[in-house]
Structure formats: structure tokens, C-alpha cells
Image (cartoon, rainbow, N blue to C red; front, side, top):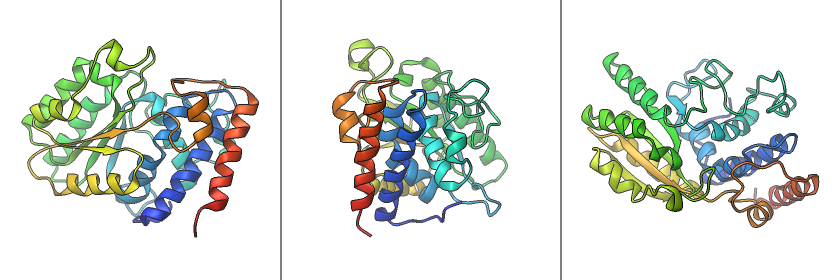
Length: 278
């Protein structure tokens, strides 16, 4: 596992490598590349700074990823950890692969079955409650999407977490204003997200989800917060950090793309990696 407590610059460099991994993985058969690229800063900060290692090659703290689409971000981090090889990850979404677009419980790196949206917050709240009953100091983190906020069980979980004052629980909402059918604003609006979680007893912070420094500050505030769960509302846009793809596919919830598009994205990211200050 890569060392913990990397600097902001080191995390930014790692996020850039994760973006490249996402493109490399998805260019084989398509996938949720836009989300993976956009979440690289959050993923780098979570996996390589916030989650405490257990001394046995994994983590003491617990991460529940609710949204199956976002597994691509996890895979991009796992490549940097050495949990998967890139050759393995290039089988993403292939027949018979163990690298599923929406992983099942027990796959390397995943503790819940993803893909049935809205389930993760309830599972994370239950795990956080159980860890507190055990007297454990483990913290529980749950990544979910803004589209999931349209589901009632998310708010049942929020009600439970607020009622039990689960200060060991942090929700991270990928607030990218896009779901499969378009913008939530046009389908079923979810804003104002922070105020809604506050009404359920959460402390909240809204951040730029592509600013490593803001992400780290939000995590630190969550750790300091007592007697309340914490919700970090992460404003992101698809493909943030890869200009070519963001301009070419600004609303690509899922994409396959032409070879020239993937290679143009790789060329851009390779250039950014080469120019990244040491």
C-alpha cells in the first residue's frame, strides 16, 4: 500500500496518475470514465491520506462506495496501491472478468455489492452504528451520488445517522448535476443538499470536489465534529482534469468513444504528468 499522509502536491500528482488509469481502463470497452476522472482528487485524498492503514496491508477505517459507477475511481486507486495490475484492470467489463463495472461484495477492495443505487448510505450507517456499539474507533466513509438523493432510503439512513449522532460516519456526495437521464435539476431536483442533511442532524460542508486542499480540510473538520454525522457535498463536473474529454463529452454518463478520443485524452494526461513539478 502506498504510504499515508502524502502532501497536497503528492496527492495531486497521484490523482493525475489515477485519471490516466481511468482512461486506460475504460478505453478497452467503455465505461464510466467521466465520473472516474472527476473523482480522482477525492479518491487520492481518501485512499492515500484519510483512511488509516490497519498494519496488515489494508485499512483500519471503512469505505462504503454506494454508486456502482464510481467503482472506476476505486480501480484507478487500486492500480496505484498494487491491489490490481493494469493488465487485470483492462479486463473491466469483459465477459468473465472479476473487474466488474459495479462490483459485488467480496471482490478485492469492495465490502458491499454496488449498483442498486441508494443502498450504500443505509449500509454505512449500520456499520458505523455497529462499530460504535463494539467500542471501535473505526470511522466509516460513504460515497454516494446526487442522483441517489432522489431515493427515500438515503433519507432513512440520514434520519438514523442523525438520531444516533453517528460522528464516526462521513457521507461524501458526488454532486455533479448529472444522472443517466440528464440533470437532476430537470428530473427531480435535490438542492439545497447541505441544508437538507443539516435538517437530518448532520454537520455539512460544501466544497470544490476537485480541490485536494478543500477535500483535506473537510475531512479534518469531519474528524473534529462531535455528536453529529458529517456530509461533504463535493461539487464536481465530469472529466474535470482532462480538458479534451470534458470539452468533447460534457454530459457522458456512460461512454464508449472512438480510439482517437481515448488516445487524445491519454496524450493530454501524459503531457500533464511529464510537466508536473517535482
